[in-house]
Image 1 (tube, one colour):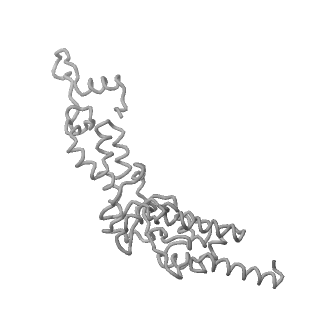
Image 2 (cartoon, one colour; image 1 turned 90 degrees about the vertical axis):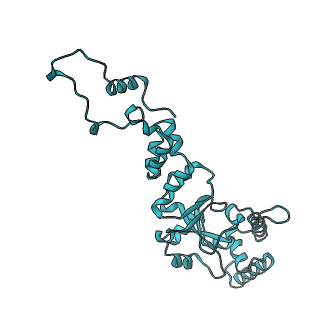
Image 3 (cartoon, helix red, strand yellow; image 1 turned 45 degrees about the vertical axis):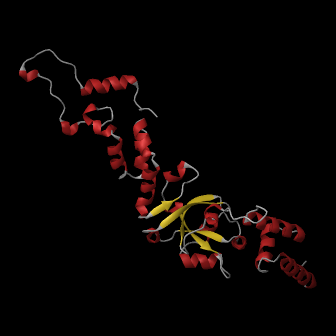
Length: 270
């Protein structure tokens, strides 16, 4: 992008910086140059040529915050090029939280524009007995925040996933940590993820775990769930509940569902 000033403004600035010679006048009427301490720093000011040096700009921009980098990128093409460098931007992204490193490249450059705590999350592997309430207590967060981060409408949604994104409750957990840029296909959210149970594999980061037919594990689960819900003639959340209490066995889920229907009819509830 070019500078924000138009050509008339450029001429006016240069006239101010380099005043034209004036007719000799008595000493008391000689024009005085502005005090250097009050001079305005500008890339257009030839007295400050250092601000047009890429290496010096990098040294300066490495100290700036995300909002300040955004403002600097509007000054000139050179400033925009340096301020948009991924190394500088990622450094500013992790600086407030003292994160050691952020690995990976986001799908969009806009990912770096906001480095609030909400851009970070913990990856939790779902274990037998886990519930939203127990995870909320374990990580000192709210149930509603876990559901919002994972794009969940029902508490039963936990059983259809291998992992959940957990909001960061205590920012101190990020100090000296390594986070991974991850696009969660189910949550439909891109976050800097912290793995407390070890370094993630490639399919954890990108959701590319596949079976022999080339279908991802998520696609297989969706197909099974859809087939089960049609057989039961219920919604997906109800089908998912019976699938979860049957250890993922569709036939056992159908049996459990049939027994509940028979009991309801026997009690006159259906």
